[in-house]
Length: 338
Ligand code: SF4
Image 1 (spheres, protein in one colour):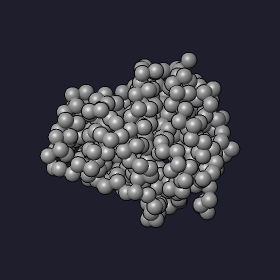
Image 2 (cartoon, rainbow, N blue to C red; image 1 turned 135 degrees about the vertical axis):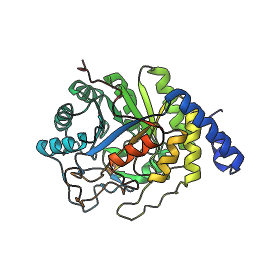
Image 3 (cartoon, helix red, strand yellow; image 1 turned 180 degrees about the vertical axis):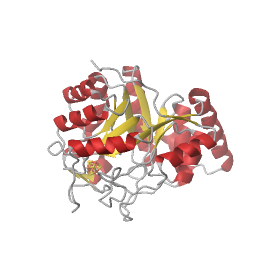
Image 4 (tube, rainbow, N blue to C red; image 1 turned 45 degrees about the vertical axis):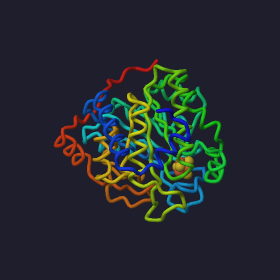
């Protein structure tokens, strides 16, 4: 299928059960053909909720009056240890966008601590210059997640009101800088419900095609977080319903048969279970979106968003095994990055 904006829009508008069924069948077949029933696992760890940016849809934005927390080295170590007990070997370290509160040296220290417990170390932090990404790579990080949120510039400006995240172009260029810095894995995505859907998908797909052409040695994956409530308060976006989301997951698989598709605990257990049959190849497990939430599960601090799948890591892993999936704790043995 030609991934033009018009074709994508036509697919999103087509509500015939036959079309949906055909899409689902093709996507499921391609996923099994290229990934078998292997499902990669990772767990996110929020290091800090300090943020100098003002994204109107986020629970951490700079105008929210929440208690700001940044984990100390000892606290990071305790969280990492608690997560590693689940057996998962891929960690995603997250912060808000505050180079002042969580500077490069802080992130390097967190990566160094994570190396004691995990094989795969990825980051979801503020976009950086290439030399800073390279410094993180040398300290042991392999991957970075950086979502454009929406590719539509007017909408981007409407919802990113302050801080570094206002800079559309610097964010857009992050994947290119990451590849040049040596990162092995890059995850791109859009925030579903934020911008015009067909144009955003079209732009995301073409961004990925450009990267694949220019930097073919990198492992790319895609994520489609849906806008979520924050402590039950919703943000005025355009909600993406389950059927539309299924179409997006299937279309993405058909266009990119070998690209990993990630799905987080923003989605319910029931939806995640279904999506695994279609196109999703990597999921987060046992997630907490509060800072310090692993060692202290009763932590009721401000979350970045509300979790919908609150199964423990063990419960999710049990589900995968009982349904014929192969949970993959690690597919990588860490080397010294040089
Ligand atoms: S989305 Fe990221 S940059 Fe924006 S307010 Fe939330 S934590 Fe900050």
